[in-house]
Image 1: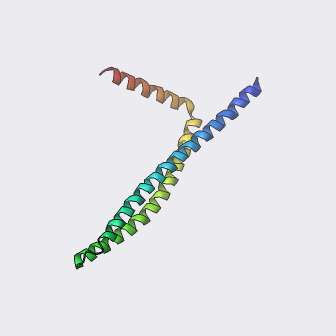
Image 2: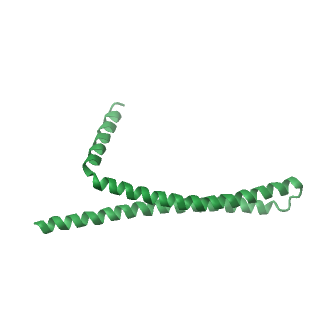
Image 3: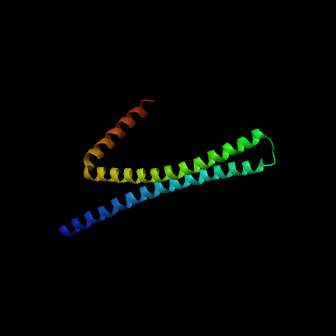
Length: 125
């Protein structure tokens, strides 16, 4: 009987790692999708910038220069922010996973309490 219990404990450990890995993967995927959307926006802005090259004038040249500078800064900030978001997401997932596994009963109790309150509020409508 003790081997069955030990086997379940090992299985729970694997499930916890899988859940943490899934959450980390989802965080990375969201960051990648956001980066792709931003890169698409920047590419569209660059295409617009190139299409206005035939427009002459001091103001047009100045506007193009400012837009190019802004796009370069935005790309730099995106790279920094993407790395930061990924790191913070990974840390948050690890902290939440550790908290839940170190204190399962308080988490279950709070979840049950939140469900009861939500049910009460929804039934009052």
